Image (cartoon, rainbow over all chains, first blue to last red; front, side, top):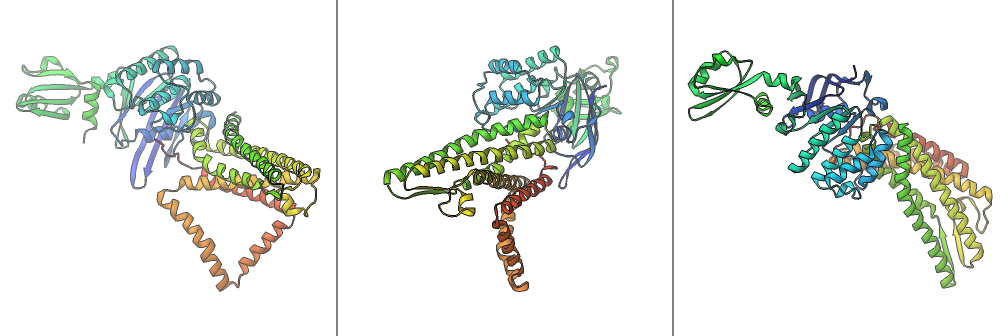
Length: 283
Length: 245
């Protein structure tokens, strides 16, 4: 099976451990959500996979080949990062041209079409773009590159609601037409939750969850009601967080619940991905 | 495949800058000639090729940051980037020395038809006697010497660019200061106080050897360029790509 395998990757920055023994597999033709709080290590992981920085230990393989300093493996990966590595004076239309040179499957026609849809002037140079249009420029390249593995690090940074909506639509259309492995690292969990199939959650440099979105959502529920009744009900259960307002309490609980055993006055609801993420990564 | 693409990209980037520079030099040659004609007096233009060497040095220094970032963004390994850069440097130096030699031919042609206008290239100033008219062999030597100088300048530029890229803000000041202090204060003092100027004498005799002939100079510059290129790879092979907002 074609995939990117991350094995035992550890990365230290001076005295800080950014990633600690990360083991992950990104399978082909799947959309992943890479979630984590600020400084959790998401961008560091993506940079190691794409050979921008080196890990202290561990390895990354792309379809069985070591990715480190390997042109063949690296040509299967495209990372759209928060940082813009294109020359500031490079015009956008030239950036399309040169991307085609390095990634022969890059679809220039599709990129120009997307530029029109997003309202991006291809005669501008990358330096003159606003934060939002800088993201749009990189999104367009990422969607047109047709590489088997595309990593999007904060793709919607600075985008307004209309452009975000357009981006998700284009991503889904592109994926439906020509499936590829797409890893989206973002803080806007609610927006991305309908797009992703699998979820990887990183906390303090370690993977704490790596499973399908549906199975992850099934693992938690929210119980709310009078504080005393809630406390009674959650006894012996794996509670990952609580909120209290006055005499009311909401508890976020991992595990399954039989609705028949829920006492009157308590309300059970499914946890959405964002709530689950917040509770899992709190503290 | 990636080497070909990378060389193509580097050449394209270089040509854009070089065309403007070469145009400016051509303008200077013509201005010098017009001035000589207009003033009806002595007008001398010489060592114009030296500006190309400076241009190549600057190109080597400033292009590194952008080019390494662009290559990594496009799935090119550091090793492939380095090989492409080395190939591109040979092509840059060939282009630059070819144009400089042509300018020299042009300058000498003007010199022969315009009274009071003298054009002397660096090669003529160093290795030919006053008033001697250069022949085909001299132009060929000029081309080879200029190539070696430009290749050396590009290599020095790449090395500086690669070293500076890896330094943090503090070290960007500390290292040049340390080089200056060691190179121009500590070593000369130690040499004077302990070795009775042995290092200075050896350095002077080496410089004499290099400047002795066209072949010594060209071979030394080419070897120096290759050595510096190899040294710069040590700074490129494990470089971590810095974020740029």
